Length: 105
Image (cartoon, rainbow, N blue to C red; front, side):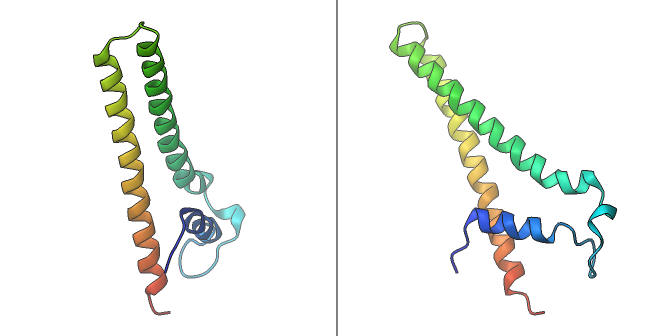
């Protein structure tokens, strides 16, 4: 089964209003609980965007002769680690989602 990341996030959003076995009205769910996962994803993607934009500016600085090669290598390594971290988290989330889907009801 091929599950896309947006499908997993959509399924999470649909079930985020469920607190236990039965459905809980949306207004009773704590706002911090609802925003917890979304803010974590947003923070992770923001750090990746910051790392990649830092890498791009370091490369542009090197091409203009304003940056050292060490700065470029450090920025590229930082961006690579950020992307690999996000991919690893995505893979774990999708694996957990697939495990949940396979559970008998």
